[in-house]
Image (cartoon, rainbow over all chains, first blue to last red; front, side):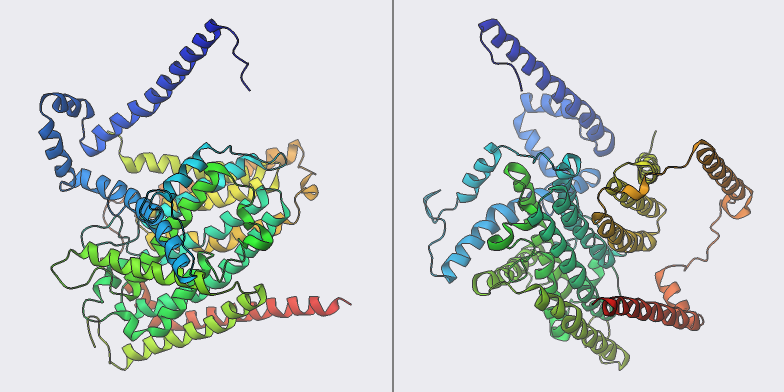
Length: 395
Length: 171
């Protein structure tokens, strides 16, 4: 730790040092980003600053044009609207508050009440400030590199999942031709992360939580994949956009109710939400593989988990609820977000009413019942197609 | 001008080779497992760059989602890694490096000598995509798929039998 400051000159020296470090860091960050923006996205920040001084209105015009023209449009999509900023704000700031109030109302409690006058709308900001000011404690015997690396890896997986969510026919970030499989490839990374977090913490509870997370995620990934294959069979497309476009006349939840149920349950298990929250298990494992994480590392875990929550609810909407299709006066993105919001509410419902299930019930349910149901669903889809009852685009 | 795909290619080459070196050379065995996972991820990124997303996605699903998880799971139980201590001597290391260099050289020569890579024209048929592969597998090549499915089923059954015998041996 730094020396105790006793004299005024030492204080001045400290301040100068701090300013120099900050300037250096800012220069290291800003100069490369200036050139990357100029080179690849045609945004000249210096010119923009000159424009802002002479004519403020032109900057607003420029901002609007970035959402329309090609190289900057993808940047805008990725960082702002269907991308990271929107998802982070929607899934954490808004949805965590909705979740707390919703669960509280069902359980006849009041929920957050004081921060922000009206029904505690600013409770999350209060929590965020608390998390920012808490010390990040790394246990002595922990594996420090993995311990710090794990929250970032989880963030990476959530962000990659987010880029596959098709919010509208034009407002999407990525549309790979194998998007459906890519979803499962990315979900397959999360057991490694949970296991590593549990192992690196060097704590029994964490390791137990990590092992439970591994078993649970591996068990529920397979029925999830097979129930999604039914959707792929009906839409004859492996890209998520193609799956949504095949639902322009009829939603797949009507043709594949069983698949939708299996997929929904498997999503709940993947997200470790109640009743499948054995890896976290507040009362027995004290948050499982996240036990040793505090302060902002815990904050990053929460952010990543809720972004993943939003992304998987969005993928459920795209697979079964017709994506962005809806009556025309409202924009497609509105319908998509509304449906995603309803799916997220439905996923919060078990949290208010169900107890946690045991590990043997969980594994038996995943490996036998859900697996069998997902195969039945797949055969139903194959029958619909092979008997000629269903063609892409309608019955 | 340097293209973005070029930068990605070189970064991913570093990730693949660095991950492979870490997998072999790291003292802590769990870092080796993580290095292996990174190496697989880099290979998947290279497949994406080559415009083969299907192969890339299955590289991630199978090699990281299954193989790396299995290796990590096993490695967790042997944290000290005592059985890795006897490292090869100097001659053994030299022989390994020479073998690897010879293999790489022969591969590079084979690539350079092959006419398909040197010709700039598209060597694959135009409609060669996922649907075409699917039609091949479900049509003329169906027996191969059936045989592969049988082999896989037999191996799964064998694994289950082995696990079961193990459990009965215990008192």
